[in-house]
Structures are given as structure tokens and as C-alpha cells.
Image (cartoon, rainbow, N blue to C red; front, side, top):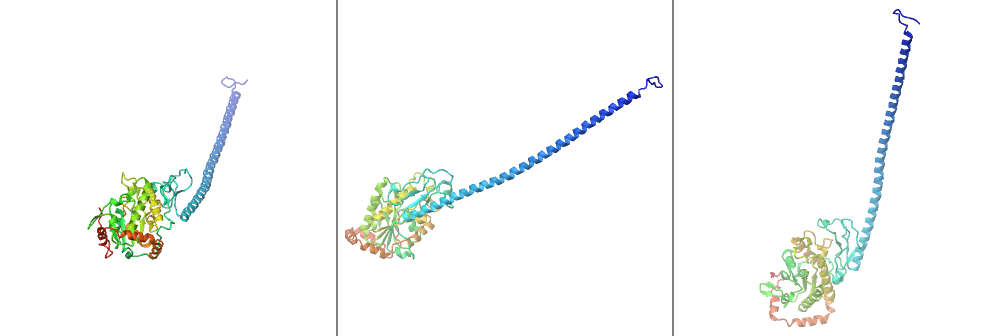
Length: 414
């Protein structure tokens, strides 16, 4: 053993061993640290790749999902469009069928998609009585561009065309007011409005507020010569044409089955007094139900359709009477009065009364046609003419006085 100068054993070898051991430990630690750093770098790389893969996956999902959605929605939209086209064709065919058969067809679908109990269009006849004039219970139809008022309620599309031979047809050329020179207009407040605001310049008027079929014989018209009944006003002067607008004040009259006999009786009495006059029966014009005052709910369009059925039925029973279908121009297309045509839902503004005036000028029976019809009923004409001679002289004087110039007779309402 070597000793150092200090007398100690030489410790260089142990010191050398210790230094070598420390070096090994540091090298081992460095290797572990290096492996750790490489492991962290590897983990970081793998995590980055995973994140990129997830991002790519999300992009693909979003993109592909959008494509699938658009493809699906396009297919669904196409199916709905095809179904709608099919329904439109079916509706068009149904309306055409109604025009051929002379009845009005109403088709209805809900504004919001609701199932229909019947799945078919409802048919409403305008002629033939209450059994054929029924309220429609199926949902309302979606028709092109409904009015603002109808967008908040069930749409109601109807055809107003009628093919009865007693419906007055459209004619060209239109007549002028001289056609009404020897005509008398009988009716309620709606006919008064026509007299005052339509622009008509000739004809006589026997009108009264509230005039109705139900109480015709007892209702009074106030004139400059005194109070008279309609029957008295028709006495003593032979008219060529009678325009009759009644029924609006009979909408609350029940039972319905009593209306037709009474209306026929009125027409027959008119014919007895005016055997050579053609009788034009005006349809009851639709109402705007949204404006009808409380307590007058019977003024509704279901009742209007019912009573118009009776009016047409009466015309078909009597050879001298014809039906003027005014709702051809006053219907909004959904079985109601044109929106904005009336302030109270019943009485028309002047612009619409002017439309009625123009309608009468283009809807008439030619004189030669009616003369030919009269020739088929000589006995009827002879009998009524002989009965007319027995009229009271006072009635005759009342009827004669205001027709010399053919201008509108100033008859105020009672």
C-alpha cells in the first residue's frame, strides 16, 4: 500500500473509482432524460396527428352531412311539389265538372296542414232547397293569393257559375239606360242604394228599408202621393220589366220550407198585375260576415246560398221569371262578399253599385226571345190581363202618374 507524504494511504484509486461511478450515474441519467424527451416528442407528435385526424373527421362530417341534408331536403321538396301538382289537377277537374253539371263546387284544404275527415271536395248546390245547400265541414282550400281577411280564416273557394236555362246570360252589345225606361225596380235598402248611387238614369223604383217576402202585402212604401203597398205601386201601368231584389231581410225567417211557397205567391201576384212583363229576380248578394253586427248572425253566407237556391228554383217553376246571378261579380272567390265592398257587411259602396249597373246592361233577355216565350202561354196572358181590368181605380191612378218621362221615380223609403 502506498502512502502519501502525509502518511495516509494513497486514495487515488478509490477516488478514481468514485469519479467513474458518478460519471456512469450521470450518463445513465442523461440517457433516461433523453429517452424521456424523445418519448415526449413522440407523444406530442402522436397527439398532434390525432388532433389533425379529429379535425379532418369533423370537417368531413359537417361537409358530408350538409350534402346529405340538401339531397334529402331536395327529394322531400320534390315529393311535396308533385303532390301539390296532383291536388291542383284534381281540383281543376272538379271545378270543370261543376261547370258542366250546373252546380257550384267548393274545395277546401286547411291553411295549417290538418287531416280532412272526408278527403274529398264538398259539393254545394245553389238550387233546389235547403237539403242541397249545406255548410261545408271539410277544411278550407288553399287557393292562389287569398285576400288578407281570408288568410286568417278558412279559405273557401267556390264556382259561382250556373248552367240553368233560367240564369240570365252575358250579352253583347250592352244596352244603355233606355232599356230601363219602362222598368220598375222593387226591393229593400240594397235596391235603394242602387237607385241612389249606381248612376242609373231611367226606371221607376218601389223600395223600402226592411222590405221582405215574408210580409210583402202589409209593408208600406211612402211616396209623394201617400203610403202604398208594392202591389198598389204595380197597378195601373204596364211595365216591360220588373227587377226584384228581395230576400236579404228573410235570412232570419224560419222554417225554410215555407219560404219558397211565399216567394212563388209574390211572383204570381206580380204576374197578375204585370202579365206582359219579364221578371228579373236578383240573387241575394253575399255578405261580409266579419262586419255583421252582433245579434244579426243569421245574416251569413250559408243562409245566402240557401235562399238563392230557392230564388233560382222559383224562376225555374215560372216561365216569365229569370235569375240574375249577381254573385258572379260580388263574390270574393271564397263564398263571401268582396273584401272592402261594404262598410257594414251588407250595403255596398257606390263603386260596387256601379258594377251592378254595368252588370244589368250586359245581362238581359232579348225582347224577341221573351216575346216568343209569351207566345207559348197565350191563355196565361189572357187570364191575367182580364183580371187586371178589375183593379181598383185608385190604385191605377197611383201607378200612372210618374212614368211619362221614363226618368227615375223619386220614391222615398218608409
